Image 1 (spheres, rainbow, N blue to C red):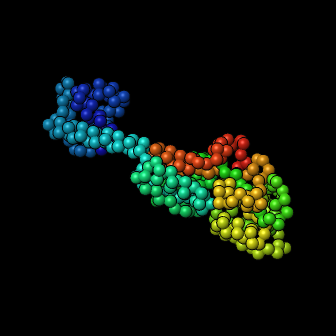
Image 2: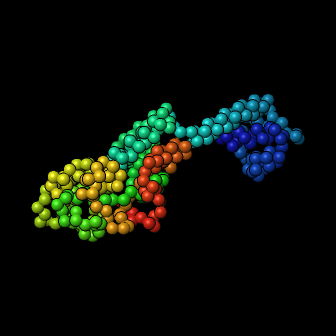
Image 3: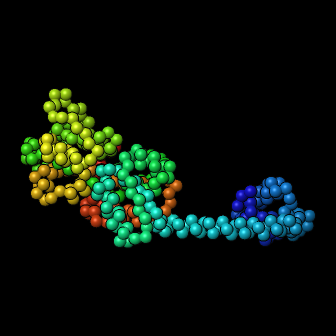
Length: 314
């Protein structure tokens, strides 16, 4: 039994003619007649008395048509409710954020919703990219703030902004004397990296050309899950590390001038996107979270012109 079949018997009962009913339903008469017959066979009753014209419902058929009208009306209510949900911000929003975005974007999202939609509950969880993608697919989180492209057919990516990379360098390193840095001038033996599993680690390696570390390096090998820890390693032990532009908010002006260097133009950058599963349809929620992220960002990050970006993929 389907809603289509129920709509067909309601139409036949109304028009008392199979041809007229088919026309009102925008189908051919054989198609409508076949579906009505299938429903009668499924229920084991005759819904219509076809022995005279115009046709009429049987006593049991009349009761069935009446119930079909109730079912169709309730189905219409469900569609209306679904449409309303699409255009209303959800009461609860669960968002996964990768670790290198979480310190800068999570506070912005929480602050924006506290000001504009204080009744909405926001749950933010820090997740590495692979885990975040899995959680989106199983529905345990609604949205993800992540670096793209992911190239997963089950997920939808909505680019929000491009974030340039900078180099955080020890004051006594030769690179600190440069105004801008060319990626091919970097050496991996001087580079502090995030641990395996972080997409920013993979991007840092691509910026440096995926060159292997030299075996003759005298510096200790250390990898961290925290960008802040990597900066401290640079301060204490020398070398340099890559940092995303938004983390500059954590540095005072003196340290920026002394230890932060720009890359030559076009600077390598990462594409930050709002990602969701293909079954997630809440447009108003997607727009609200997008606005929460983008509001307050420097305007140059919001120029989503791919041709002007040296985007570093994953």
